[in-house]
Image (cartoon, rainbow, N blue to C red; front, side, top):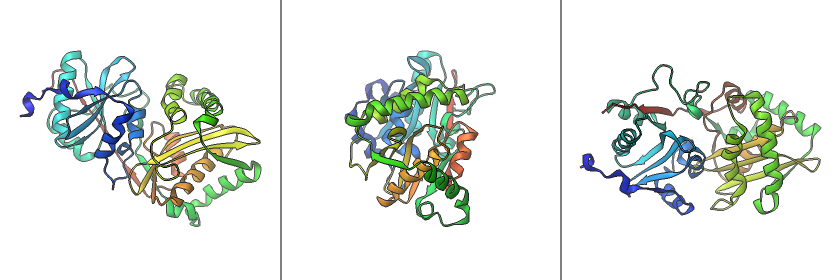
Length: 322
């Protein structure tokens, strides 16, 4: 039956109305970062299409804006591995390029490897500096009950960072409203991106701004303080940080934006802690930072003493594989 599947019939451009479809396929018990509409929106910023046939949902985008290879993101639903293979094979035959599938779990990975997908070959990868994009280092998941209490010895260094910042820089936190705060937040984002690329020259300012801008520009669906959390932080009346977290499942929130002025030591710790504190107060047990590309960022997240890590993978269908 699947051999004759007409994949083009089920591919369409994603619109805001499709959020309900993504929610339909979400796993309400998972901690996986890719379970969220917000993750897919960020991952598909180069052009967001979906394969959706009522039983299976696959995000479809490209590695660069208007540039191959195609990238398929976190296939979900019935026969997801098999339908992803047909979709990838069709795209590969049309372009003569490999097709990447990202944010797959270990069970899916085993299924993909059995039917012709591979890991990246020698010398290949998402990027020369981070082979698996944001899955180069595993997702970092925090127990919010333990974090908010922060009484354990393991939080000693975090307490020190927080106390130093709060003594030196009293911080005002406001709920972010794009109608009121967009201009300040967008300027903050551009300053942050400019500084970030000095430390990480493999990145580009345009890409960083583009990947975060949806969180500044749009008012998410759902209830503020329950389905999502967005804050703007001020020191001496100056906007210095922005954070955005959103529901992944009934137990877990994901941190999707954490932008700050690095001239304030301890600010990065403070905005993460304050955002997670609000999520805990709203009833969430866990917070997921997501995976990441760099060891520096991975070490920073480890300050919050993860209770677990969640590893996702990439698989690739190279030209000529059947």
